Length: 477
Image (tube, rainbow, N blue to C red; front, side, top):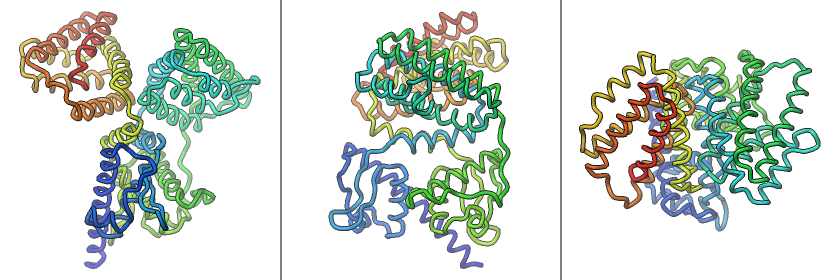
């Protein structure tokens, strides 16, 4: 028994070291400017550089490959080669955390109504002919030529803002998961598909013509119609029995672990994410999912990396559901966006849309006890401080408190990701630190926004919030 416990502790220590080394490798790729195609070194050279064993390094490399930062190439001229990532790992990390939070379909669709029309308006002003061709190829002949998800993601990418495109990708993936659980009458499906095609074609026409206002309006109406359809037909599915669960075995060998990790995650979500619950021993999991031991163990490393579940060795051990942290999703998004290199303007555009929307929602809730407490707290401290450090903390909590009060957990997570990104960007620049006058301005701006919320003046609250965010450009990055 002592030997089993010792092996379990050694295994957990190795997993921790591997995750640490994976983060160091990723940080080195960022520091080098993400040189796609360059070799970071052979396995032996990397062992020496990071001072770890071969088993720890190989586990770290698997995590780096999961994030699509680099891939190990064997043979002459091989080594750990830097790759060009797609948005998959980052969006999956955010989806995992949001599903743990148990967001509602209303929160999801409200986020889509806010961000997708903005993307359509931007696309109308920046799309080129190649982009127009790609969008037109998604519609035609009275039916969509590609899935609705493809259209919305492609439209978001046409906006030229990588942050907006990534967030919309997350929203579309989450919507697709809800749509799978919808059970409309068969007669409604054909009509819905036809209407999708009509809506998409109209949006493409407006974007092609450069009519940003019309593209924005049509997209807003379209997303609202999708929201109504899902609200009417959504029916949560029950979890399948353990004997019926299997994993698609036709997936490429290197992807099998990710397929299995997704299957285990889906089962956790369908059970309501019961933190602390045992999912089974290794033997039971092998029988349940019908995979090899090597695939299972690699899948468990992915789950542990994202804080979804953790394997416990020894008597009474097995795979146990854990409580994922927000930071894993933030780090995954930040890593991907380091490659995409968003500008300050890209970050500000999305942040401002979410922040101004939050203020409007808080005005509507001004009669609640929570909002009353917020107004009282911020009135008490407003206007009497010139300490930049204290003002910076007050600024952070002012905006995060507003986001909490607005009540949309999807947009709240997006805002926290943006705050983190601004912090990282600002820390890497030589911008001057805010001074006492800047600090006093922050408090005055907070007081004026609080006043507008208390008065129930939505338009003034939005105006003052927008002006405040514009003035804070040096603080946010």
